[in-house]
Amino acid sequence: MSATQPAAILAYEAVKKLILDGTIVGGDLISENALAGELGMSRTPMRSAFQRLESEGWLTLYPKRGAVVTPVTATEKREVLEARVAIEAHAVASMPGAERKTLHAELIAIAESQSEAVAARSLTDFSELDVRFHRAIVAAAGNSVILGFYDSLRERQRRMVESSVHASAHSTEAIGHEHLELAEAVARGEADRFTTMLRSHLERVHEIRLSNDDEGVS
Image (cartoon, rainbow, N blue to C red; front, top):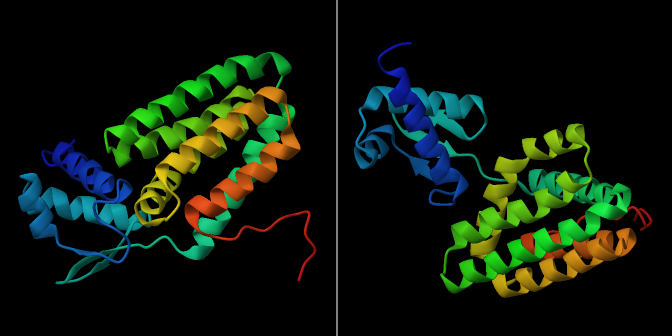
């Protein structure tokens, strides 16, 4: 392990957190020197962090200029959300009945924590709880392979939620109310109703139109 490796990891994690929590957003031009100074690090580990983030698709590097944060495209947003609808709907449809009561209590607790985050004006906590709410639904179905795939979307989900919560006209209070309605549909095992509600919920939060398998192709 090189002497700079721990610092490079810290720099990577620090910059990635700034991207995920919306402190720096898609399209922003950022500087190695400026961020290194703000974070109290040297330029060498920051350069390593930028290179790693570029390899993962978070940044595009421009020599002597810095790096541009990769925006979330409409196509990426739509594809991630449609994958979420498919996975969460399958989870509710295949969930053992015995799991529904336990999951319902967990979802209500998370929704209540979101209300507390709203009162505290903590959008970061609210967004993290949003990811937890939806992940709990998938986890309760008991399919570790599907859960693993869902978790692979987690960082993109978090970034999308942060961006949408800041920009959308759909209020955090409305999101919390819709989470309670989704929890009730889960408790009753109403998979079709849950799917319809989830699709509408995600469309409103992220201000995008998703495809609907029940609709004809126009």
